[in-house]
Length: 396
Image (cartoon, rainbow, N blue to C red):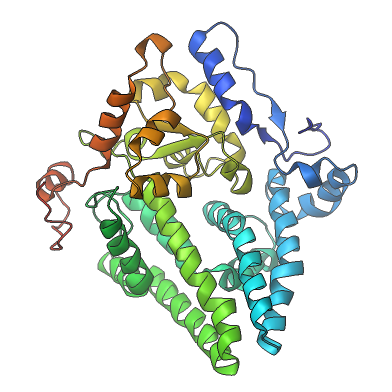
């Protein structure tokens, strides 16, 4: 990839591929951890015309010009996913239905990352552009109206993977496929009811109304589309919804899969960081999940820089960091109980002389992947009501 003149394009980031070299320099103290800014989507952004298009057409639409890549992908999705969906609804053909789902999957990770970032910090002063993401593209890419924002921003980051978090991993054995199935199916079938109830209990009535209303409206549209064209509606709305919700929940499971049993409230010790993987290119540094939980409004381009600058704190807190691993891969390795491979990809942030052995890393990972007992939950979260479920009452 080529270095981009920051004056020409403010869309820059720390090249994730160099993160380990920078970590080495920071550990050794032998040289300053100089940050090299490079482009993320080199195919488009290294063209001679892109900086001018971004500056004159994209930047005026945005609060933060570093997000011009969001507009680029919105344009690409409007030019591909939207017409493909309309064509399928008007004239369904099986092979085009399959191609459409593949197309959606190509964009789903990036779109969800755009939705994620724009939920935390509004993208544009223009409501129409924000609405394109939240209401036009969202149902075509596996999201229902309002649910992501209210679940992730108003709920998940408030509860912070604690026991009242509907997507909390605390009470689950994180290398158990059976536990994951319970976790995923609960979200898939009951989030439309459980999330509004959560808000009602806290007298957040608008949040409850917006969440439930968004779910009802989205499924009504999908139902009407399916009534008009059974297979078209199924391929355009329901298949993406199931796949994307599986992706979100398996991703959240992996992001909070290794929790320190002695300090589950510490963000360093309850969330995972993944570096040096193409997923960070596709999803705007989403692999830096610890940095995100430490500051949910930190710009996505600043996550690698934060890791470098705060390396001593990371080393002190002992977070779990992997290289060459994305969250879906992490989830799969957990389901396969492949701790040996996880140990190979584990990144030790301290001096090499202190690096733990493979068996010690495996023991650490297994200790942090186990389910919390109800007694432990009450100890760390004394105001949390008990969960009367099979998983919650596990005693091993």
